[in-house]
Image (cartoon, rainbow, N blue to C red; front, side, top):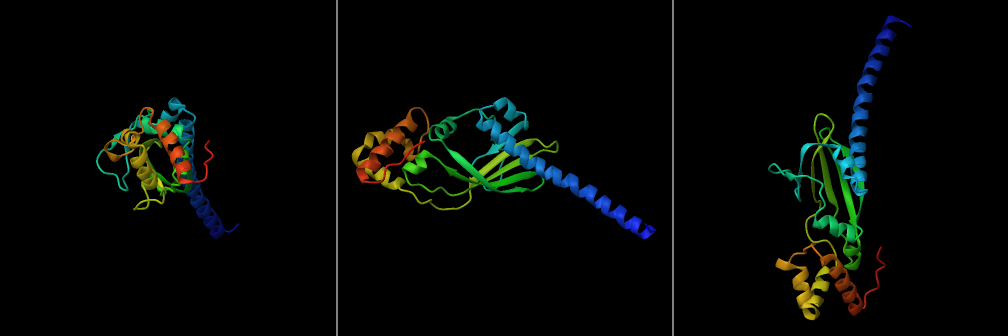
Length: 205
């Protein structure tokens, strides 16, 4: 091998050595998010928290981070219980590693959406990382503006005319409240409305 060939070979080997760790880091960050989510879905919060940096933060419904965010404890709240009751599932696509963060697009389905013929807008998810490769923050937002197609307004109009007290209980301040027995009662109300409206029966999970 000539001296010139040796120089070319050494240069190629050097570039390969730089490329492989970078690709590995990208793969590891995306894989970290997937393993973290898998642990959460299995209810193993201790395992999930092992992927987090100290004092992780969360930004609710924001396209861009603003302020310091809220503490991200992973403790189940009323919306988590709502999601569990309605068998919520999210399919993730378009995974990207942007160095200090991983992003993905989420497409959510659940029984409540099926009962109301609701096609929700895609969600944008971001998981932020610290220098040690731990997840330091989480941010999500609806990727499209405007109302998603659904029959939810039809359901509310029927309930105002036929079950006004029930609707007032389910939507204090005219917003869905996921707490207490409301998920069970929403399912019962929506099932009754579909039957009264002559809509096809929905097979629930």
